[in-house]
Length: 354
Image (cartoon, rainbow, N blue to C red; front, side):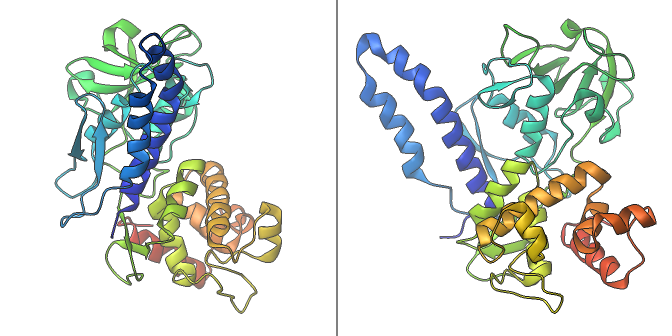
């Protein structure tokens, strides 16, 4: 069976949401003693497994709003658009507000935004005053599209460093996690106060994103087209991407460039494993580079740090290849032919320019 990494990721999200909701559902079932049906629904998600890839290889997401599977909205050029962010955000309606929360067990406003976009393979900063610097500006609410981020000064921010953010739905409404004592909800934009900024993350690629290209799982890696990974390795990229807020596509592109998905690869410089980590680096990360799951996890952790440090995927790739010191020293991609070819090749795979 061939499944997309996106399908596996959606399955993980469904499992997480089901397990999060299970205690409350069992408590509600107590008076009527209907525990069996609640447990059956939860187990059914595990039994179902990820959805098979269809002929068009379109990613499917579950819309909790209508309880049906839908193809992720796409723009005319095939990139995931802002409608996918809306569909993802709808899954978390009713999740309680938790200050500092960034998971389905509880969200604050920027934690919700970061988590929603991470499920689409877009890595965003954690706070409102850094998120407001990502993407492209939108001049006014009349020009805003579903999926755009709408910012407000809030009680703990300013016009230039906003304290609140929501995901625009259209028609003057947004999804947000307002404040303690509330939950993720739909409300009018005007209810949150004056809009101080609007940023468009999708379909344009965000500065910190590797791009929303799908990663196709298959028996053998492909040399061209979509990034293809061995089917048994696909979950490693999804899990590491979700853990560190990194696109699974980016991680798969690195693995293909580094080793062609060869777990026992060793370079002439001594780099080891599928992700070609130096022994000292691997030891510092506490992982075994020849174990694929650990190698991908270690690479995701490294790339997450480099993206936060340099706020650019090409620069993060350069740091992965040549070291962060070289990127800092040259103030950009170092003038090493190998590093420049490396960055250009991966960015081309991702459908972006370096």
